[in-house]
Image: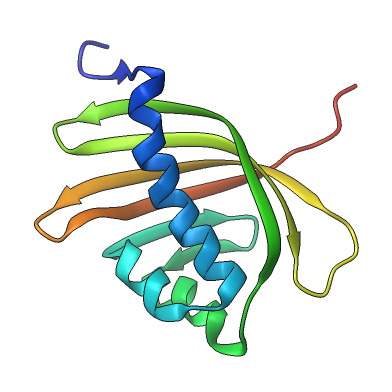
Length: 130
């Protein structure tokens, strides 16, 4: 596939920072930051089904949803001009839960006149290795 290119490690850091901004909004319960980082056409694919921007931002109406998180094992693909796919492992604890969770996330970012915006995210729960 000539159009898709794996990016160098140094290119990952700015996209990890963008992703951490979204995660930190989940920790602080800051819906305005979440709203700013997501594109109006955002699509989320989760184990509960599809989500749009309003649903993603709306989850913060009751406050923070994540107590703490760690992102690791990141990879970055260039899907086209101004479009990047960040994939990584997330270890996190939801607010009100006593067991940590791990999932793999694919998150697509698109360059807009307002800066990079998240246009797509898919979470896959990690299962124990055999």
